[in-house]
Amino acid sequence: MATARKTTKTAPVEHTEAPLTPLELHALVRASKNAAEKSRDELELGEGQAVDVTLRVHGAMGVAGRVPCETIDKPDLLVLLVFVLERAGPKRAKDLLAAAEADYLKSARPTADEIVSQEMLPARECLERLTVRTPGSKRGNVSGSVQVDVLARGA
Image (cartoon, rainbow, N blue to C red; front, top):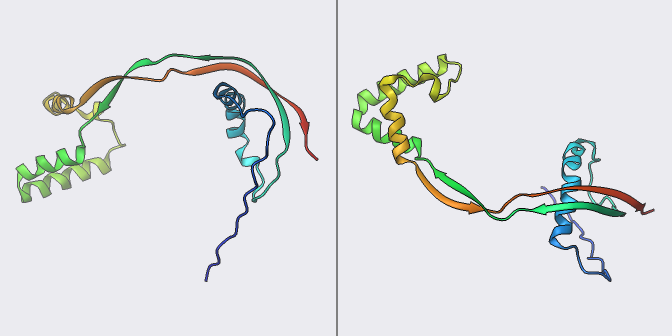
């Protein structure tokens, strides 16, 4: 029988200063994210590893405003395929699926652009008509050039 693992959480440390501002948090992430991802495999396995480091994060950050974007909602191809095959009837649908499966397995996984012939352009046009494009906006990028200096490490 498996036993439940007991985990202990450290109590939050009381600070005399306010927590990091959103800009400071983004600066810290900007300065460390790539390095952290690259060094992931160098971490030692285990829980409860102590971390005690004092850092100086400095540089310049930029925050862009909202920018226009477009949400693209494409039709569910499986549902569309079922509608097409239902119109073909059970016997013809089974034959079409077997042939399509064989062609797919023989191919080097081509893209639709590579195999759409002139006769199949109506299929592409149908997908385009069923695709819903909704204009909108998204938050702009946060950019910057930030450095981190280690001021002290705990004992």
